[in-house]
Each structure stands twice: as C-alpha cells, then as structure tokens.
Image (cartoon, rainbow, N blue to C red; front, side, top):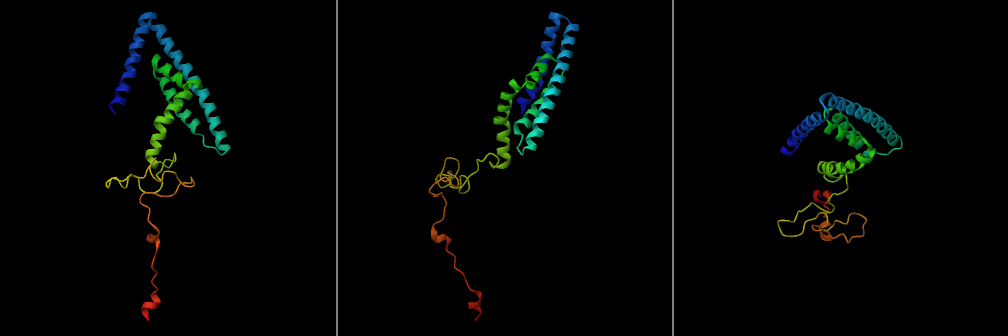
Length: 188
C-alpha cells in the first residue's frame, strides 16, 4: 500500500524537477509550449487509438468472441489519456508509450499475467483459468501428514486424462452400499 502511495508522490516530484531542469536549459516559454504540444499530440493519438480499439471490440463481439486484449488496451488507453493530460514531460512520455501498439502490447501482457489473472484467480477460486482442485478438498490431509490434494498432488490429472482415479480420501466400494428399508414391511 505504501509503495503505491510513494509511487504516486514520486512521479509528480520527478516530473516537476525535470520541468524545472528543462526550463533552466531552454527557457520557461518554450518549456510551456512543449508541454502543451505533447499533451495535444498525446490526446490526438489516444483518441485515434481509442476509436480503433472500440471498433475492434465491436467486431469481436459481432463474431462471438471475447475481446479480452482489446478491453485491456482500452484500460491502458484511459491511463494514457490521464497521463498525457497531466502537465509534465515525464507523464506525457509515459502516456505516449502506452498509446503506441508496439510498446502497449508488451505492457498489456505484463498487466494481464501479473495483475489481471492473479486477481481473477483469487476472486473465482481458479475457475476462470482452470486451476481448480479436482478430487477433494485442497490440503485436507495436512494434519495427518498425508499429502494433500492439489496441483501436482494425487488426483491432479483431471477428468478424462487416463489417470487411475486413486485420490486421497476416496471411499472404497463398501462405502457406497446402501441398505434400503421398506416402510411397508415395518407396519405389518
């Protein structure tokens, strides 16, 4: 939590220090002109890429596909728009990096793999990515020292994988026998 707050405070500090440095080198009016021009250029690029991404999302929906990468692109473009509107050269450069597909695609992959997928796994218990436990409750036998059922453990082959089906905690055949009591016989 504190790392995020520190990062949110550090970026404007670095941006303002860089602006002061640039202003002392080329002058304040030219620095202000560069900041305004980079913000305008960034917003035009965000607008064009946003329209392209929206069209791609609509096409994917029309084909019956889920536009997961395009939705992540839309989120990154929103961040890019906020960064380019923030006065400063560092934030404008970061925003413009997020606008271009050549640099946005690797950033999207990192965000998907290290932010989105772990979050979805935590919220769905692994159902979204298919990393659910098969064959019992996970780590149910830890107290007794037996191996738990989980990824890489007994029963992790999944259905239809040709495994032998022996899962820790399975019942033997006698456990499935049921005695039926006929209520009509008891009344007579």
